[in-house]
Structures are given as C-alpha cells and as structure tokens.
Amino acid sequence: MSHPSDFIPEQEPLSLKISHTDPGIQSAIIHRLLFHLHQAPSLQNIVIICIGTDRSTGDCLGPLVGTHLSRYKSPLFNLYGTLDEPVHAMNLQTTLNGIYTQYEQPYIIGIDACLGQTSSVGCIQVAEGPLKPGAGVNKELPPVGDIHLTGIVNVGGFMEYFVLQNTRLNLVMKLSDIIASSLYSAIKEWHYRSVLLAAQE
Image 1 (cartoon, rainbow, N blue to C red):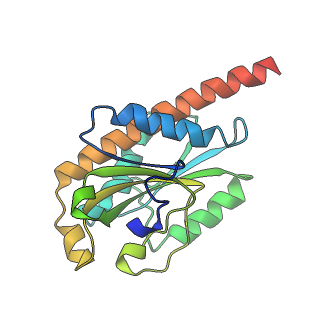
Image 2: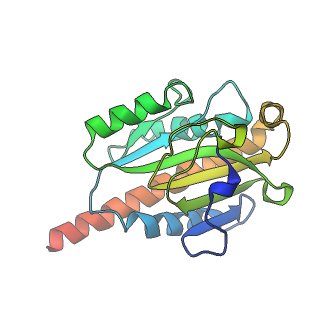
C-alpha cells in the first residue's frame, strides 16, 4: 500500500486524480496513460508490477488488477503480481532484481492501493515517477515505476492495518476493473501507434 503524499499535486499537468463514479473515467485514464507512454522509447519493454496481498481486503487492489490483466494473455506487456503470485513486501526487491536482469531498460508501471482523505476515497490516480509501496504503513520498500497508478481504497491517518482489513471489497473490485481495462486499452493503443511510426521510418 502506498502513501497518498507521494503524488504530484493534483493541479500539476503530469498527474490525474479522478473518482471511479465519473462517467468519463476510463477515457481520462487512457488519455493520461498515453501521454506518459509516449515519453517512452518506441516499442520499449513494458513491465507492470501490481503490488499487494490477498490477505487484506484493502491491499488486494494490486493483485486483483494483475489477475484481470493476466486474462488478456497479452504479449504487449510483462506482468508481475496476481492473486496466484502476489508481489508484496517480502518479495518486492527480489522481483525488481529479476526484472532488471531480464529486461534492458524496462518501462515500469507500478500499481498499488493507498489510503487518503475521506473525499478522495474511490479515486484513481495516475502520476509520473515511482510509487513508494509500504509508506502508508511505515514500511521501507524500494520505489517502483516510471509511472504509477493507485486506487484510494479507504481513509488514512489512523490504524492503517485495521482500516485496510475493513475495506469494502466491492469498492476494490470496481477500482481494479477500471484500472485493468484502462491500462490494457492504453497499452494496446500505444503499441499500435508505435508500430505505425516504426513502419514510416
């Protein structure tokens, strides 16, 4: 679980924060992701790391997103972190070491849950730079991602572990569905554009 204070402020052009109930949320997330992906070299290896554990309702957002993405069976990205094989505090560093050994200059997209203000619960954030998993529950873990997406699953500031355990699965499921489908659509569009550009060179 990440800490909400790690984000670029909402008004900055390189971040997006939007409620899951907003009717235009998927197009907004796709647009923002394409903006970031176009900063990456054409056809660069995309690696998605979905962080969290299925032992906590609030913290299972990442593994749920990973499981949704795995069902696409897409060759367009390399996926780490599902309900079957979660990436969490105990294996995050090992996972990152393996990724940097296997892929040359991968473009990493980090996904995690976070806690925030009451008014922000149910929002999805897309921002440039790495997320800091574990910061919300005072864990020192390595930063993850060239960009990151987070879902604000509950209220932060007190008894974080208890809050995560008592987060509504319904909200987490909705956020995970939106993140997974938007991310897949954005990567597919980015890849299509990259192939067209490469063909014109």
